[in-house]
Length: 564
Image (cartoon, rainbow, N blue to C red):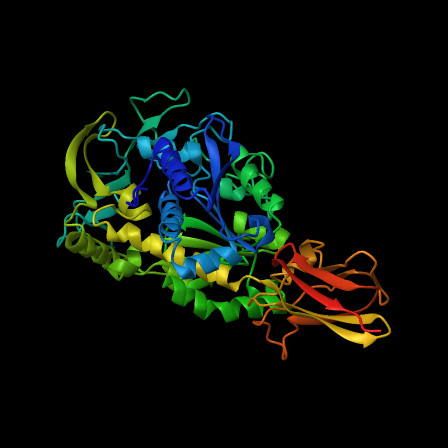
């Protein structure tokens, strides 16, 4: 089974997934979740060990690559799968996957990622026209010089708002009052197209056009969905796209999913609810839960833990809307996160949104922005030997005349880590595995620590059973669950030998939800003690089963004989 990391095209990714399944067929289930408009299958992987079925154990779902260009997520998801399969004989792995189940969807945007990896476009989710309206005239980002990349263009213009940095001619600086030229224009590599979509000989102004591929899968989930005029990229209606519908159906069909992580890039931050406002939007219980978990999650990932609102709010009072993690938490009560992998700014010592949110970045002065850009260039020179920034080179543009084309590799430096040196991408795989194992370890785990029969005389026996949640999280996972779902409680069922019956109530009981040991109340209500008085003749064999959709299943057997 291959173990090297990279950015795989669809056929190579599927081959690796099948190799994982073939390496450990007793551990790995590979299944088809849906099909894209271009006919590619969206695959899901289940990892599970031990005698219990995957659905009878609490589960974590990790998905990736909902945005076409965020291929680091697919690579990290594959690393997670392959490393666990490779180490399946290790006691800690066997113990973890015998008591929990891991679901992984390595690539959601199967069409978009293929286009991203084989063409120059920077895609959001898929290379299909959306919204279906006539394209406006404007400047479209395109690979003008045919080198397979869309970089930046700069050219001299007395009306320009940029100048070349005198110390490092790669760096463009904002023009300042009183500064002398030469001055430059700066925009994405591309051409001006008119109303007919033709490359026009004359352009009226330098106005960038919107991408014709504006669909954003992560705005297509039901929670906080808004129509296109209010939320660009949202799709025709919630779950209108087969890719998002496949994920939502998988989550809804697997009741044992209690935690969820969506892998994205970039920023080096773990995002958690809410996105719709500050933490006052959370219930007091869930606010305490997320705050209590923050130090642990930061230790696991090495990345700051922020609410989505805290990370992306700009201060203009516009509501933030997000995607799958919002839906998983708001509508399902699942403990949900977005892991933004790859932290170029952190590695370079520059300021990124993980440190103070987008609002803090917007407040940076031109001097601070230039200082950060110099740090990135320094990191590029020292770690990548300059490969991440393409030198400015002259080019004869069909409309602008003499320009220079160059700048950062947008795909495999800014959006995803470069493959050389390989430890940069491998680090994101290791972060993903640590987080996955940590979240699996938090899930509720139903157990029957004790069950015994005591003679009461006169042909009677008393069955005493303790049912406990041995996990950190309660069986409901979050307080939001009670607002979103009608979740069954822990069900305890007793089966008796023929000829025996209960004198003290039904043999099947719903004992409600059990807290986890992480519950702040003292003592935590994470166990329940049950008793039945049983009557019958001869030896008695009892089977006790405890089950819960999110906490799994446990069973035990006990035998006894009544005394006269």
